[in-house]
Image 1 (cartoon, one colour):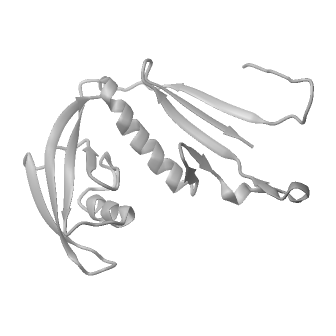
Image 2: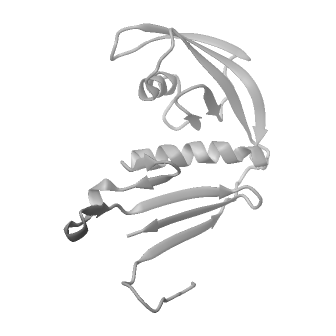
Length: 171
């Protein structure tokens, strides 16, 4: 625990979590697929809904909403084509998935996968993304005297050198 105090201003509560990412089965692999929708889907949520409908809830999968799918399960073949109908538009889409590479859990190339998962968690927490940070608009603090509002912010990053997760937020 580190405490630091300035000589002026108002104290601000700041919380930081530093977690070493450890994995149980370092031999397990992640399958990375390139994904293409025909016709294209511009809405990332709609694309995710179609992709996730092909998996059980307890299966490990992460989709960036555009073109990259990470899965703990190998699909039936290196190139898989599936037709799915959008619930919202009723339009049928051909989903082309091609195995791009296998990634070991112990590999440094897991960093983008962790970041995709963190991004999804922060969206599920109803945080709003502004550049690399996420903000909780529900906990907004207005400073009427100055005509501004302050949003508590969160950031989560993976340190590429040590495979550690650093998550910070200010109240």
